[in-house]
Length: 210
Image 1 (tube, rainbow, N blue to C red):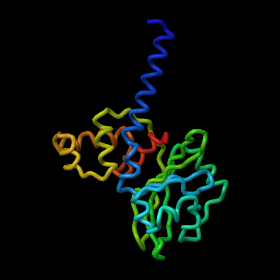
Image 2 (image 1 turned 120 degrees about the vertical axis):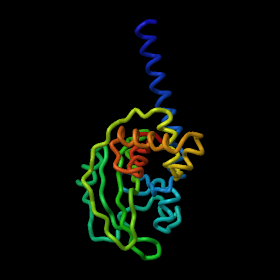
Image 3 (image 1 turned 30 degrees about the horizontal axis):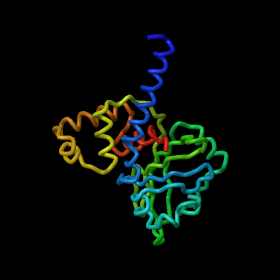
Image 4 (image 1 turned 45 degrees about the vertical axis):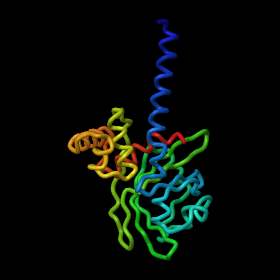
């Protein structure tokens, strides 16, 4: 095999791996029980999942194209400079208090993952925790680590992203519950995730090639 042929084969394998990763998680955004939203560079809603709609109580049509700043329930404002600085990071975390459609406040701890998709700057926000009428302690951001998850670990994380419990994942994949726990722990270690929710957030960010 020539060097050129080997490089072509390696490129094709990389493309297949990326395609498989993206395909594996393509539906997780819509099916996940974790609230997720895709914002553009101007912080406008581009896409929302069902959990996000349920969390805030708005119709999707009321959210798409609307700046997230209009939903802030607190007086804190992120300056353009701070926002563009965040866009240069691989990942950032924080806490925001949002106004629901019914007037109630909900505090959300989130992870943000900037990506350039087909030449467009987008940010995937994943709610790690949410609480109505209460404040959640903010945590220091951690830089993500690109992880090479095994095929089985990817399958486990995908089902977790879709809201399956550990026993349900075991039943779906026809493996032991302890095996699911092992795959989950291994994936969390590789992704440097502190919880299953953060594991899902980081995994989804890795496949944000929509």
